Length: 274
Image (cartoon, rainbow, N blue to C red):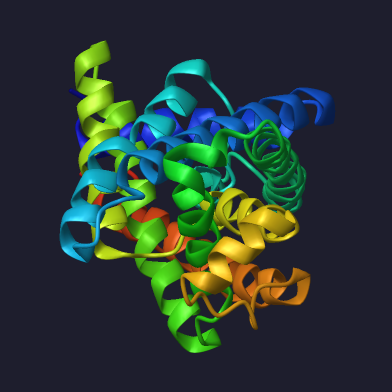
């Protein structure tokens, strides 16, 4: 595998390319990443929707959700949270701040579209009918809970999440084999899921899926009968979640990239007079 110093040199080039790619290529690759991360959320939700033990449910989700990031890395898709590592390219003077911001804005929008398309497909094709609609109730409950997270907690959970996601991207890119890349991405992301941290792109699936499901009268009725509080579940509630989580993800991802750069960058060689 690559050493941390070798990773910095590699990612300085990767980030420079990401910051200069065409808007069309960035956007399409971002739509794919939003779909793939959403797919990880779909599988985790489906597998754990009948579990009542919170710890066991998180462990199961933690074993399944990371495959979304693995697919993102292998397919070369553009993920907002991972692209916060462009901070390394910025510090290495291989990318500009404007280029980094441009990348993150385009990719964020693309990730959102990919996740929304998947959420609509899952809800309106009837996939949430599983277990007599229990999957729909679980989806609505998850979305409502995320919308009700206080700003400060969502911010901190976002920071912690993207430290681990970017660690996963780093570990994956350090691997020189498919297995190494997959394991490198799997472990840190599994940790953030089990820890209950907040990922803005995953929430781009979880919350819209819950919102759409709550708009289906049968699903909404089942949720109310199950005692789900729908008060916070709205477009406003989605915004209230995504703003602090996105800020936290940026802080955590850029902070992790800057820390790795500061610890492992190649020191400039100084000439000495003989």
